[in-house]
Image (cartoon, rainbow, N blue to C red; front, side, top):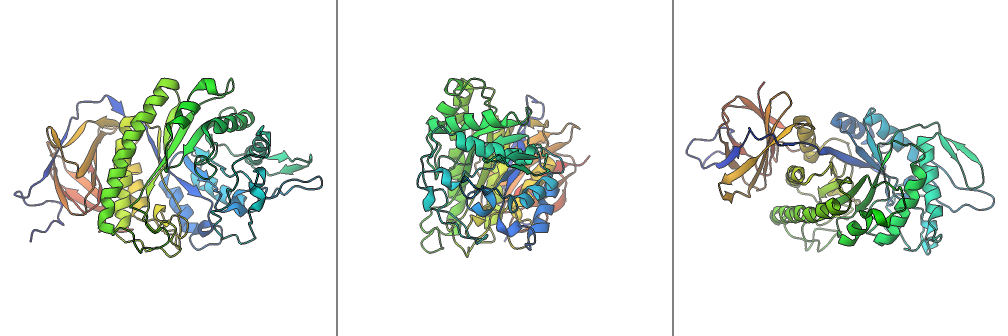
Length: 497
């Protein structure tokens, strides 16, 4: 049996040809590669995973990391859990502040994105039926009840977000009863994203969302004239074209409202027969086909979305700010995720990142920094018990460290002329210092040999794959352009200086 574990396979072994046109320097890397973090119990202060998780976020050193306190944990994400009365308000940031402070500290002054996405339940007709309790670890999937705002003018919602933003940007705010609340915070957010997945649980219509976006932006833009705004943040469940046709049409907005950026999400998954356990769901050996097929479908969908944006608002940036995968038992409180899943998921995210470069995406956010059981654990970049990075984190950091904004994108073909080989993705880059790099992804669960034509310089390969597990990428010295990709490998080949 041939040993495919070596990076220099025997000459007679078949290899997939990879050809690179290093002379074509017509495009540069303009896509920011980043991630986002939830305000979630496993990484709260005092939790076992807290210190290591935030250390890992700091070590990633990414721009435009996104902070998202989501509705699933309203005791943290909603600092006003009760409607104001004539006698009192319920403003309390004591649970939310530690997450914001730790996130901003980990950013170390790099630009960040704020998405305080959750609208208090009491602002909706029927919201009074929501029961929260006092268990800070309970996941509230039923929190977003009600579709109609009790204040149809949306001023109540805009006032809420203005006060929340003022707490973190302007040092405090004056509440509904005229009482001043001082925070001492004076953070700067590069972007403020208005809601997260309004098309999902609230099923907000495009027209209502545009009215809410305008109301919130008109208030918040006075706090920091340099802060930019992100709209839509559409879920992966569906991308109804009407959201894009409506939001991206300046004539649908109030005069002067900026359309700086819009965002969409994508998660690949196998068939979900049973979201709460493994019984009935497809076996792991079928997942790779589902993941990459859905990924290709998403790319084609983005071409259509991009064409709408170019027609209506060409200056508006397209952000892909939640990209990931998850297993079928997505809501399993005791998930059974195969060890090999993490390398596969890493391969999918790297594949989509490379494909997104050709679409003009301004940002690619690998989701999510900290999933956990009952809360989409398969999306996590770190272990929810220890905070240690997993293969998805390792692959993200490998690419972040290897490909920089401004690097030149070299046209790369995998396979024979006219017959592209879909088993492997290859994308080549030239750095500002002239150093050559090739990012390769093995989409299959078997080793594959590749031959980068004309590559004769000494190089180093770093691979995240099943062998490396959650550890650091496996690094090898390489002579020549013939290498073997391990199953579901994300591999970076870099020429020696």
